[in-house]
Image 1 (cartoon, one colour):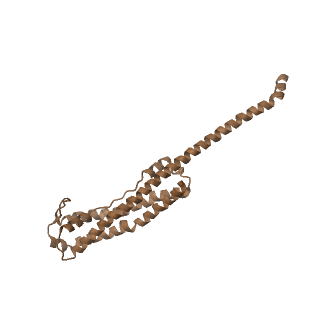
Image 2 (spheres, one colour):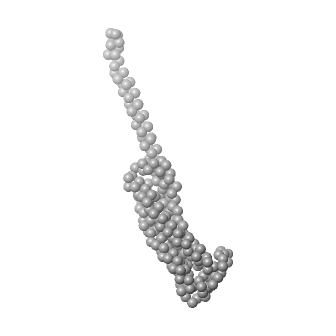
Image 3 (cartoon, helix red, strand yellow):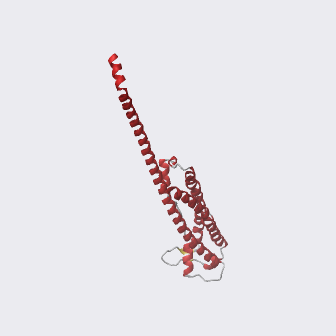
Length: 228
């Protein structure tokens, strides 16, 4: 026992140094592991946000294309309404406007990046403002927008069969032929239905789209600042 104490008294600095080296090594490895995990989490977060940003940029382009198509539809509906109330004879140009009056400008956001984000967990987004804004856009704004656009589709579905009763057939390769022009012009319900559809088209999507675009732009602005 005496020899043990003598050995310890002589070599204790070596033992202390050895313990210190081991402790520092363990703590260093732990810190390095934490740093590496945090780095991977930041890379994942950045990739997720970049995907959402890319999807939103495509959404903006899609909305603009949809609006241009809806303008074409509304113009044709206006021309058709004016013709119904006029003495103008039926012609092939009106056939085109009948076709276009029955078109539907659909829209669907690119929700794949958001679904991927949800699979990893919204908590991966550390910025509370961005996380709330993304959730608001995809969980509130987009669903509400779809429901408003569905109102137009619903009324179009009601008008389509009714206007078809006045047509011999719908042929997208040739001019539409009307069974009885005078009867069609004298039909107040037809004019009402086309006018109502045109008014709904002015409200949905035209009236509500600026609100949706504003929310997309706000989300993109936040993402751009975060990713710069």
